Image (cartoon, rainbow, N blue to C red; front, top):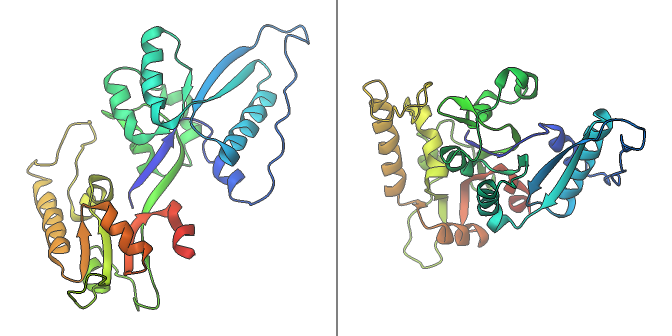
Length: 280
């Protein structure tokens, strides 16, 4: 399944801390190396846009890291999500950018293209990425080189109502037929499948048909002799979904979301983090 992620550091620990449902401990200040007569601490600034419980998790992890590495201090700074990338880009130009930045993976390509982030030394972080699924790590690569470390990741999954769908489709090809509902012309009609068609929610599945966008060397292989048949098969699959009268497979998120909220769809493809919304 397709994954998207938040990049930078502290891999996997975040998931463990936020999934227990327990009360988070209050971060305790780490002993100051200056107070013990040691060399001045290395201060690392970490920009993020989290608040509430997720921000508390970052605080706990930062203090834990400081205790394990007494010569390092991590300064967490919350920034508005809507301006985070722009603020960082301006800070790079001014020479005042933080050493660490927590952003969605979709911004990584632009930042790398402008050389606002540079490739990482993979030999030094092999242990940090060893337990992360390879597909997630590959998403952190630009032109074949690792530019970030995934902190959390999300996957596209099929959500379906067991009362209306006897058995989920076994393959993507069966996605429409397994969830299709009889066509009606009523304004509040129900759909077997409500699927928001966008690059983020459909392009990842091109590999299931034998296609690919990027090669191992970072070059585009979408229309190469080897990958063209898979690309065409993927496009045909999208055309069939779009033409399925029992499915609302469109590029209008508002209409798809409205059908789901009104319980007028038996199944949908969405991000895993939204599971609680569908369980209600």
